[in-house]
Length: 383
Ligand SMILES: Cc1ncc(COP(=O)(O)O)c(C=O)c1O
Image (cartoon, rainbow, N blue to C red):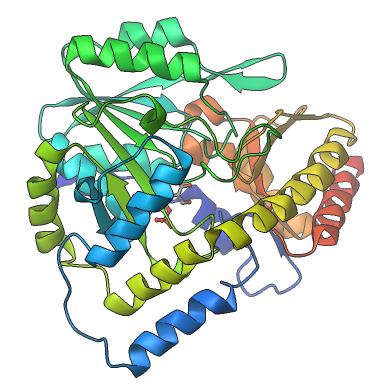
């Protein structure tokens, strides 16, 4: 086995979940998904496709009608994007891996804004690249980018800059001004930007239906790949469907890489994706409203627990917080499972920069589950 694979750390979230194995009394908020199943209008489309016998291979880059629909959907949120620049992928994480396979290999330098969902930083390592981490910082109770530090870290030796915003786990959302400065800098250094914008619709500012995107400001030929997913905005985590937007020059390479990775996304899953996009205008705003209600239940309740500090967040579906006197997040998360029946993700799972923090996914059909979870945390801390 390649030593780089042997040395990949296991998932610390799984480690915590394993501590609760066999217990059905744990209130689990450790994974990044809602407890609400995919809406019926999306499931029905997949069932119809299967009943119609759509069980064959498809085009590497996706069904033309889905690429067209994604082009219209993207254009409704950002600048117009030609369908020829869109590839349908087998999940968001697959979109990110394809981008990384196309752009970074042995000896290349990748700069990543962290803390971040660990899959993003593992992918370049798997491919033999090195990862330079630039840490977000907490200012006035919210996670923020140190823009000068990031720009200093990205040089002409940097092949790829990886940015996930709205960010998992911190909830940090990049600003338009930061995006503009980063894009201008990367044009100078010749660095590719891989932007993970899978949470763009899970955004709670009243003046916008989605978070700032690099697609709003970039030109079609810019060195930019944006990775997307059906998982979060359409409650489709188990379907494994995503897409990416890339410049025309990269598309033949993406097509080849899809052939050698998965060959195509299953047609019946793509039909579900088409139904999701057709229903997006009716479905997504309601989902965002429900998630906002969850956030507005959880954040103040957590902030009211003595010793707890919660980061302010407008995007994503996570509360990120720390507890005074508890600096080892993995140990605390394990104790919370065993002693309090509360399942959270340890900050350490997202990098050393997030040690001491805990992540709580607030996407829940019943906000009362969140309140019950906070009661368990408060009781545990009182003991
Ligand atoms: C930041 C981030 N990017 C990408 C993904 C990938 O989503 P999926 O592979 O389910 O499409 C996730 C999932 O949790 C995520 O948190």
